[in-house]
Image (spheres, rainbow, N blue to C red):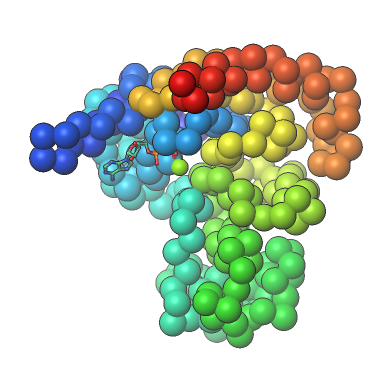
Length: 256
Ligand SMILES: Nc1ncnc2c1ncn2[C@@H]1O[C@H](COP(=O)(O)OP(=O)(O)O)[C@@H](O)[C@H]1O
Ligand SMILES: [Mg+2]
């Protein structure tokens, strides 16, 4: 579904060069949930930006569904790390914007948006503006907006990082429930190894900058998974420990 071939990205500003991504090869199976994990600043968001087609790689090629990505990839929904709600629109008009652009009637888009807002526990906030929402609420509004568009693939950049623990579990539950229905291909960037093992079919570990793949592990925990209970199973613990063995080196080196 998503194929990265020898992808590198170097940012140049005047004479300075920042090597953000280096020689990444990655092949993502359709309908799978793949977690990308690595230290802060290693190049994960840069990688998602290239898959979304927001800017080209400096080297290598990105393919989506067999076609090279050369411009904005509209088949993939992208939830960026920073929320980008329009401050002059209230929640319902922000979340329903993609449907509005697609020409869906006001009545239908409001109806569908209200349902989706209820799914992310934002019912009652339809008329609020983004400045009146907490960080977690803004994230949920972005998630609702992306899901409403029903993309085949979801690129999620640390979508649940700002949420408190209870809400994060509720969102994990929701994501897996929606995935069971729609079977999107999901690329999930996260800092949180528990989140990665809970949700993913596969975890890819990146090195500190420039991001290269240092480890790749299959999460063969059966589905459906109970997002509250799964972490207490032996299988979970084994996978967590095995990924952490590779991840911790990246953090240890960072501290020095
Ligand atoms: N548009 C840009 N221009 C220059 N440098 C950038 C740009 N985007 C990211 N970088 C740099 O690339 C590196 C990787 O950033 P990023 O992909 O955001 O990391 P992560 O998402 O893993 O925390 C960082 O050093 C960052 O400063
Ligand atoms: Mg990032």
